[in-house]
Image (cartoon, rainbow, N blue to C red; front, side, top):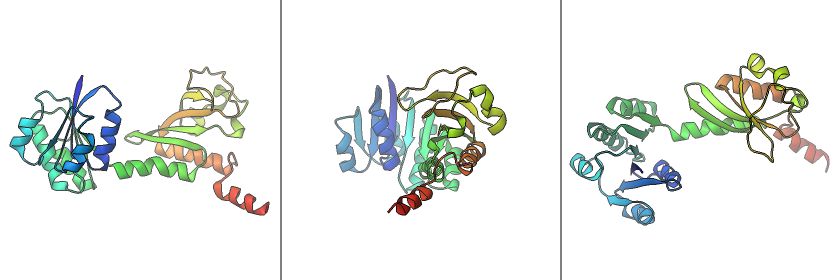
Length: 236
């Protein structure tokens, strides 16, 4: 069983903990706030109240061969940097730290964080495309400039095959899989014909996905929010 320690239970740390609790993982949480620890004491392997910037105490607390450490010290930038540095010195191979700013993130990487996370920025990247396009159902940045998105098939695609549409050549997108509202994602062949209600899972650059969704919106592939509102009021 993998061992994971969460140092600091601000909103990101708690979100990670909630996900880990659904898995078969040995979880250690460390925080100075006793009330926070008490909420999870009965659901984790160990809940310890201590200051993570105490290197000696951290060394005694963390298991020697722990698989990963997640650091979320809230707005306390100095504490998160020190915690990342200490974990690196202790030989932790996977150190995931939440950053508040670009400068904070750069310092975390310098002192030893193997992955720096910007939760607010990443959440915005996932939500904004869904706001500006009715066709984008889910949007997941996966690193660099690459994203994976769920895109509702527009009316102009219905009845046409994967080969005919050639999404890669025309839009710069790779089609990963296709599903309907009633079925799970499935394998497809080049002669698969899109049906009404189909949803495509595609990958591409942020620019290509945004351009694809935007172009289809302009072509009238899906009614925009404001257009729907206008029509609603016109019927009254």
